[in-house]
Image 1 (cartoon, rainbow, N blue to C red):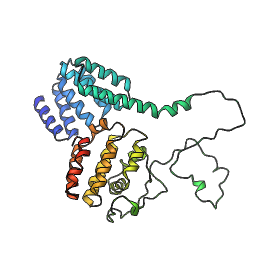
Image 2 (cartoon, helix red, strand yellow; image 1 turned 90 degrees about the horizontal axis):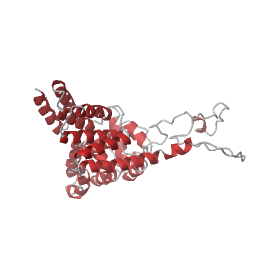
Image 3 (spheres, helix red, strand yellow; image 1 turned 120 degrees about the horizontal axis):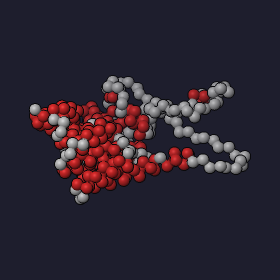
Length: 330
């Protein structure tokens, strides 16, 4: 019975239905908990679902069942990928080293180690400012005052109306106040968008930042189903140059990329996007930090839909987009 469930899990995985695949492998494990291959298969499905902690636990259990050399390599490798995504670089490196004990020149593991080194360097650079701030060095009082600088998305309430005088109570700004991640006073102007305007999509006004941060994009990607058409239209109005600036300052997330792919598909179906914009945007995303690792978790089915959509937009686009789609392994 466990073999039947395993086979059905393999079919679901091949169909990119990773949630069903993980469940089927889990049921097979219940019936045959000593089969380490089932844990390896489930771990791969969990990677596709970005379930990093559960993937680590699954790999640990599989490794405790005395797997053969080939399965042991896969379990250590997949555990290393999960630890990397959790920014647990020490355990990730240990896992990859254990994998190489089973096959010293495994190309997949060696590539993952390169990606681990790149992500670790990026992580350390992004945290260097916090480390500098945490250092306490005695300074002589030279009569100068340190004024904290805060990065916000909009002016504080007391400064929005120049005709009103703020009260003494309102002039005190608390350092614990956090800016709203998505809301902004800057309204997206549909007439300045990079693609044609579709009035049925813009039937409801929306306020989004002109140049969002990665955190804001992540928040937008979690919007409700009712808000998605407006979010898709907004994402497709951002120029590739804006995306390049966003991702040059931090690590790209697979959930954000998949949401951007959704926005492209939505705009193709709505007839409000051009093929050259799509090609330019895919090129920009493929040059983002850690793209080679993140592309492993992108929904290939969405990319195939975009590829088909390019042909409907312009027959010549199929040839001109071939090179960029190869970067996405399509």
